[in-house]
Image (tube, rainbow, N blue to C red; front, side, top):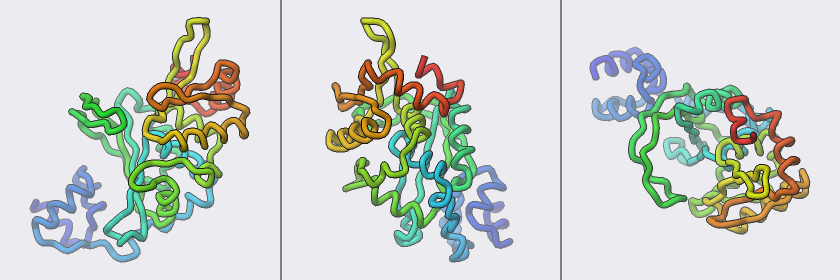
Length: 255
């Protein structure tokens, strides 16, 4: 605590102190408040006005793809709702994949961190699991993420809309599949591809099904637990569409 107080007196903000002490900004904020210290953030530091999200199509595409997968967004109350932030995490076994995504999105991200595992509740599966240690990263608080949040969430639940899919491309599909997809071996031989879309309503999934049919001629259906199955006649098209964007360590989901 003395070190935090010392660095705070030098004018460093929570993020800068966290970096020096190898802690998270939220931990620094907690202890700063315990010490009754005011924030050293200047008003212009509260926002990241980086416009990469709107100017770089691949960044936007990657962001939308992983938001439909494992990533999440939330409105930043510190900025009175004028910006949003979020995060994505992957287990240590997917370190290469985590850093692959981070390299694409790093201009809109903070510094990655390692998070201890433990018992974790998964709402969409209504169960607890013993989670592994994870790599994670938070998105920088950014006004441009507010519009994405409005498109992605309705009454606190993720939704898929045609407007959101305007920025969805082959990279988006690859990241969504690597995040939440898997393969099954068919009794007739060959492989079937599945995307776990359990957290979405049937209406949202059907919007997505229509989109991938019109864009790539990929046929799909919805089976148990609201999972999206790529139909047998479209498995080759699906694989060929995303394979250039799937790194080697994740190709086990395709082969």
